[in-house]
Amino acid sequence: MIAPVQPGWHGALTRTPAFWVVSGLLVAGAIRIAVLGGQFVAAYPKATLTATALFALLAVPFWLFIADLDFLEPEPLAMQALAFAWGALVATSASIPASVALDDLIAKLGSPGLAADWGAALAGPTVEEIAKTLGILAIVLIARPQINSVLDGVVYGAMVGLGFQITEDIVYALGAVALAGRGDSVQPVIATFLLRGFLSGVWSHTLFGALAGAGIGYLVVRRDKTTLVRVGVALLAALGAWCSHVLWNAPIFGDGLGNGGLALLAVLVFKALPPLLLILLLVRAAHDREADYYTGKLSALRDPSLITEGELAVLRSGPRRAQARRHARLRGGLKAQAAVRRLQRAQARLAVELSRAQQEGIRPSERWCEDVREQRAILATFGLPEATVPADGTGAWRRRAETVLAIAVAIAVLWVALTALGGS
Amino acid sequence: MGAGTRRQRIDLLGALLLVLVLAGLAFGLPAIDRALPSQRPVSSEVPYPVGGGVTVLPPAGATIDLTGTRPAEAQGMVLFRLGTVRYSIIVQPYAGTLAAAADRLRRRITGTPGYQVTGTQRTVATTAGLQGVQGGYTAPGRGGRYTVFVDRGRSIEVTVSGGELDLGRSLPEIDASTRTLSYAAGEK
Image 1 (tube, one colour):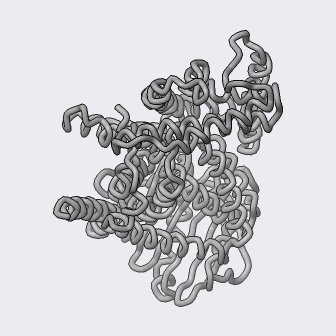
Image 2: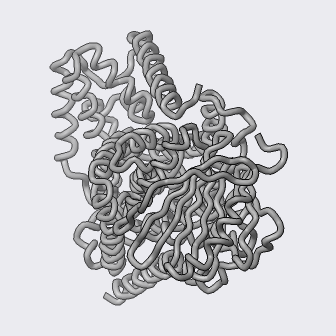
Image 3: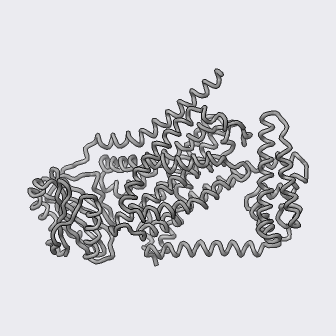
């Protein structure tokens, strides 16, 4: 179920008590992280600057990828930033003392050996998943009308996770600098960047947050289900995020596969693949559901100047949208590619506005239709009447070559990382 | 208006619940942790596993601080307390030389504001034959000593710190304990 977009939250935002409470928490978190950062800057200025710059840069492609997951109904930038800030400032601030305390409690109530082996696997996930999930709930409290689909929950959850991951990575990098005992050295920062940035960059906090977010999205949106089912699914998703995190931190397969680079890669894949596949399936299902809803709105227009049958099929699928843009680039260069993207964006905006107008019982503004026609006219100047993928497979070989190249680059990056870590 | 007020109340309640859970994590858990005793008595006659296959006989009268003790298979650490004196042993995988390991530890010590290494290093050995180096350091109101061993691909860092008076009283017991550092039978 996709709830229609509800407008008007911009004006009401500051009138929600949750906005001010969450703002206060963000300020408190920012002060706490700033104090921690100040200590790092005083001790290791060069390393702190390098770590912050590297991980901030790493966040950019992840942010763009996450935001683009919901291409048809993108989340407001302010809400994305709020989710990221919660993860980076609030969730980390709460998790640092709480994780240490829980680890100590495991040692006190169990044994120091138990804490040494399983402390990181139990304390970290328990504290951090709760702190991050609270961030998704904060978004729900502040801007409930913006949660229209399970995919929205996935996006906000992933953003919270990304923010958490970036701050945590910077703290880990500077911890490595302190441990190395070589003063203000950049080398431990680079090693941490390769290890945590690349090897565990894709499938750790961002992924766990996305999984928990999917559950919250379901809880908020699926009003056709009973409260028990919705709460059950949300709890199950949170449990899934916790289990994935526990698996990731667990000391299993530590030595069983040797110490080489391939063994490390195998461990990463074994621990990372289950949650990665799970969230990919969830995102796919949530995306398809949302795509069916919005393309249904456009289909009802029966106006080929706004969207053709071929474009409906393309707009419904992320890979096909990308294929259509690649096809345009082959035909007319980067400008044609950008023109297709703008047309797709205009069509998506129109679909959202149609949904919004239906919700309010009014006629959609002609402005959105004009925008689509304007973008189509620009595309036509490149000799492309519509933004579709050729059925005869033209350009397929190039797409395959690009995919192979991308995989080769990814493997090369992994090997560089593994070599830097001393793998063989 | 009435509905709006009710919605705002629910919204506020939700936000306060959020703050409550967050405060439970950030302040509640550490409070519970602090409320439970962190020190346990330990026998000075049974070798204590530090981690990475390394064992040590605890000093007589020492207690174990559970917040600084994490013995694991490949590495580990133990923190003993004798009154106000801290006696810490950390075992880590290490591929460098003894001189480099000692230099790394000295830099970490002097990296703390107010801490300074004093005097020259001297070589030390355990009864099991581990060769190491030892030095001293001072800090405001405290004194300290460090010892480093490198053997079988691991570094063993021993640091002792405390008030000058207590430290002087405890050092003979701690030195005797440090000399018992060894690898457990069968450890490679």
